[in-house]
Length: 517
Image (cartoon, rainbow, N blue to C red; front, side):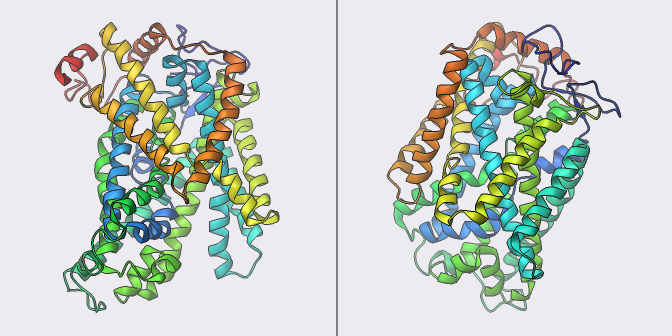
């Protein structure tokens, strides 16, 4: 899909011209209003593998383990399963019609413009709030190394990454490539050391085996603990969907999305489940040190490698910088897409000659800088309330994707439109995913640690919905728009990695529906 030249012009999402939120081939002078296809295959690959692994895995996973004990692995697996299913649904739509606006654009067509408007702005708000969180976390680590005020480091980190994003999308991709590579190496190294300790062949370790699974009971927090831990883990996976946004700025969006969707199972299994399993096998999960030091650091100390704390701090700093970089990128691209569709200021939908949406980036950064300032001038409790307004963003996005895929697939089924990546057991797994997400939201209402996130998030969602209905009214989606956009996307975007469509790409949606049934 390509953006129309001439930034002020608004194209219909299903117009005969190339669709509006995609990228132009990489050139020094991209057409005004068009994003540049500056992401290389290795960028998209690494973004999909580890681009959104944040400090929550290295440190925050301790909270889930203390709630559920070793059975936290079940919580991570359950939340991960939801992500796998949602990514499969999103991949089904994105490989047919890659778009920088991703699920927001698809919701426009399937559920109505009010839905695309709402989920787009809620998603932008969530990532805009992540900017100060990650900037502050990075500043805390740097402050421990160099005795400068934390706000200076928070400003510098945000300013540097903003500057790189303003130069070109290729810079974002290059930074993410190296950030992700560092995280992958450190996580795999941690798992390898943990396995050696479990097997009793790590010289520095006085502990071995899997005693952590049974010393205080596997179901330490009972069934309630598993569900409580699940509530904290669902937000850990937010950002997995970024690859469908980033791939639209590459020369092979279909191939990039297909690989990301097909690899999400092993990514979650290795990086999340694998590392959490190492932790719960080796440590005393009832120790207060687990929460105070973080799961990775406490594990390293337990196996006699506490001196690697600096390396772990580097990993956490890398994860923080990576998430901040992704927050800047993702917020700006969603703002760009909203601007292209007329749901945000027109300037957001324009790009410079290098294909960079400058206004969208700067607007997102201004909000981020403002929130960074608030983090230092407001009492902690007030800032926590602000963060709570985006506490359910991941679940809202997953719910929107599920309902959108349900409508889109049925429309493509009826038209016999080719589907390159199929959702398994449609529509039953889609229904099951929706039911599970709704169950999590209901559980949050009765959980003291999560209810604030739910009610504040619902309050902001209500405000955005009012604005959406005021602008677009309560109009449903259109099967005709879904099918027309899909046919247009299939015509514009080949899949060079799978020219013969040898996997599941030869089946039409109608054939797939019969096979699934």
